Image 1 (spheres, rainbow, N blue to C red):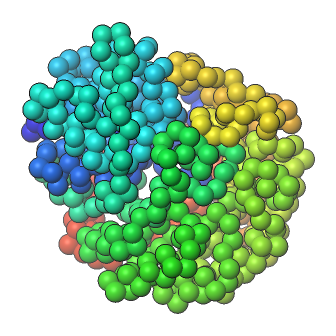
Image 2 (image 1 turned 120 degrees about the vertical axis):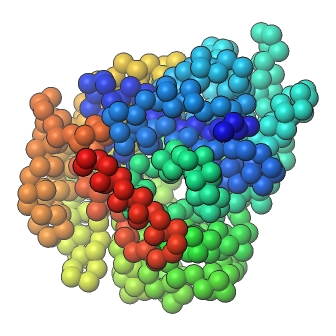
Length: 555
């Protein structure tokens, strides 16, 4: 079935299945694999917007299908997709290799179709891309493009001039043209998983619409409370500084509580799955979160919720959260146990506040608490990393028991310091050296690298690449031993993971799963936060389809 728009998600490295590469810890602390096969949540919103306006549109998660099957032929699949526009996300920079290679394949297969890029990284490197990659026809720059992608589809359908499509970057001969900036509204964002599921059936392409490879095994939904951010974490490409200077004039922009609640209500009705609410609800203010909680209560929301915090909230907020939603989980990223380092990198609070937050979360009834630390921060030495490990062990021993579970995680800043972030724009002020600048630099890092440290685009005056790597390996072994000592990880599993990490350290053989995308150290149950689902007609069908796939694999 022909479409006007096909939204295509590429793997981070296109030929990851055939290359001898060790992807390492670059995605240990997220559900996605090192191939980063989770497409941006904006795909769901843009799909909803296009369909609402009467256009045929679909999602093609090529990355997830490549992860799921070594036999999947991406070229054959894309050849069978007929579309006027192929929209490829280049949101986070780790996708540059896969995104540009998929774009080239699509242009060769469908020379009369238009290839469109969008996302933060596409916006940041827009002129560079348009100058050097002739098979890219358009870039939609900035954020909140739900209406503009509809406008582009309409313009091409009616053979109108494209100069009136807001935020579009295109060519006129050798000239690169930037259309006027549009006034997009956050009210245009709506994440409708019902539309996603119906569309998967319409195009007989369930796997192509999956948000990530393991979504069938543990279905989760996501909603967002804001675009942009009020904080300036120095390494983040979505920080207030980065967002306002590159993607939107205002940061953050909050969504209406009733719209967020309606999205979650649809998830409850259709999927019955846990929901990750991204963004710090507490920081949006009491008026916001009180309204959101009331809207959710009005809709009788009774799903497991994962909530994240950028700074520790007060006890009264956590108590309010627990009273309204007894099945909730919390996560926070102090980055470092050293308060000076933490503040320099954009997390303005002390350890006492962090520990009070953990205690208050337990009192309020949080089912699980995740605390994240980072290697490679400004001002951080190897000794500081070891102190972080001591602090992490103390937290886990203090707060983990038969009723409560607190997990600490530690991982390096990988693979790149985000373009547009404070460190990227002012590396000297933060003691960093950035080793790649152009889009081709980043493409080649991923194209030629053999191990995850080859991909890094930075080192600091406190830690070189080798020290970052060794600190990562030793830290993750220590974290595994801590879990083992607390009974959170079986001895056999622990030994296999330690063997894996040791293999990485010494360049020896390592344990890899069949799709060559396994995490380096953290096992899946650490990262996952809830397996509770409500039975709905759609969730029953998902279960049947999962069982069918399991049988098919065995046969």
